[in-house]
Length: 406
Image (cartoon, rainbow, N blue to C red):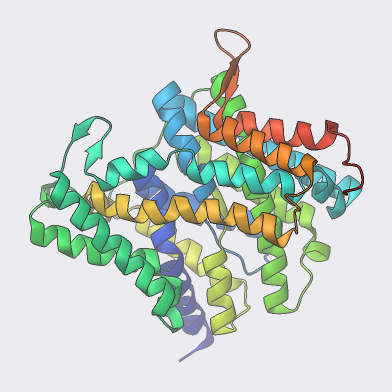
């Protein structure tokens, strides 16, 4: 087998690992799954262009934006949400400029674990009711699948995902979401709640339906602070892939370049209607497992993702996955995001006996999960993740350091 074919097969494997999470985000938020694949492919190629194809990283749909996108679509509508997602890249550009100007340590000073931890927890728990509603077979207030059937399907997909995550070995350990959706889907077919007509009606190949972003200042100001969490995730992802490959990518090509590449990808993908992209931990796990550090593998994965986006029957098939199957995955997913926030606090050795830390975390959690909103005018306000993100940074900068503990 020649080297090109080997690299192409390795690229297909990377796409397989990232696929479940990439299409899960649009399926949960109402965005187009075909555009998510197209966005992941184009985003990865943009990232490679900016970083001179030196980093073996794949960009896929970001989980951090799921809850904010659902809220934003309900509040301002889909076009305003797409415009806000494109503008979320502003955070990446600022972070890249700060890293170039002051170094990596400056980011860590503004965004220590006591700020990041509770904000990430709010992102995970902010729309827990949506996950429960979907698992119960509800779309908003409409019961679209009978409750007892929905709960059974959600339990099957959830249990499968958990068992694969805990017990699987090798490549299967990297695709628990894909396994959960597949088993849940088969159970849904058996329960008679899958409608295959859209797949039969769809052509084999077609251009994806692109979104049309509008720029609403309230939606933009709501979405921009959400990018704080994936920026921190990005820094962690670059350090992780560096430790796997034995190279320091924060030095060469430089963290400012990787942040700029990620930000440009978020910007471009948002403008044509796809979900924001971020560096994928699952792919880093696959790189560690296969020991294939060649960035060209990610180029192949990106090209395969772009090709798949134009297979209309495939996009229609993804749309047939029933609500409770996705709801079962969401129960775990939203909790997992909150757990990452908790892990951030633990790994950062944040002392909750310190009144200052306790004040910051407590206020951020209650205002974020409680949905506190501050309206400065009819068209501009802060609420949810955006408010608690700004609040966490402000409290950390303004509150005096605690005195000695007795």
